[in-house]
Amino acid sequence: MQDILDEISAEMRKRTDRGTVANYIPQLACVDPNQFAMSVVLPDGQTFSTGDADTLFSIQSISKVFTLTIALGKLGDHLWSHVGREPSGDPFNSIVQLEHEQGKPRNPFINAGAIAVVDSIMSGHQPKESLAEILEFVRFLANDKSICIDEKVARSEIETGHRNASLAHFMASFDRISHPVEHVLGTYFHHCSISMNCKQLAHAGLFLAFDGTNPIYGTRVVSPERSRRISSLMLMCGHYDGSGEFAFRVGLPGKSGVGGGILAVAPGEASIAVWSPGLDKIGNSKLGTEALELLVKHTGWSIFAK
Ligand SMILES: NC(=O)CC[C@H](N)C(=O)O
Image (cartoon, rainbow, N blue to C red; front, side):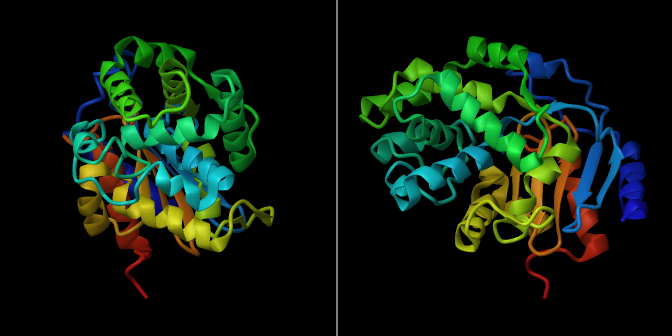
């Protein structure tokens, strides 16, 4: 595995077209695009890494996997009255479907859906309490208490987040937001601003690759059924209007973020995190996707393989 990862890393180093860093969040625009990292965690806990795997990056929308897991734990199937579970085929920050669909977001991974999910888990609490709960959950999953929120990134998102504010207010106009919009947005921006490195992220996703149970510690996080459902949403919606392309090229459930990270799960095999800050036109990591494509070629880990 180490040889495979080093080969992929060497291949990625040669790439001249590395995509473009997210510049609509000023703090993310400062990140050096020449970075690359990949980590693979196996069920016995062995962790293989290459590149800048200890460097922290903003996990952005990958955090939506964790908030969805919390929301399903709290609301169960009732969550689906707040948010749908169909691919949107539109950009992650699009508002168009909301008007035609009575303010109900298509799925939990587009921005509108993730904002609705956050609202559903706040249950009358202050943003600080909800954030503490989300952060605690991520730390528990990764078994790492050092994971934190990057306050500078959160500030930067708050200052420039007009589009997300529009989505939240638009949903509120359909009575679909039950907490003060500013509180919901503050919580959303902060959970998007959690910083992690590839090793931590791969560990945090391990439960999804093993039917809801972390195989290293034997701790059950969610039921097998729920784990499979979260993974199926990652496959169908985890890369927004690029989800079909990702399934076609990689063939694994994955969730991307505009910080350039991707969490991918190979059921029964491994959890994988990859990071390269340059994005393609849709907002998914360009080299991250290429690296996962190569990994799957080497390992045969596609969910469509026997
Ligand atoms: N795709 C993403 O990672 C988007 C998340 C980002 N925080 C936003 O709201 O725009």
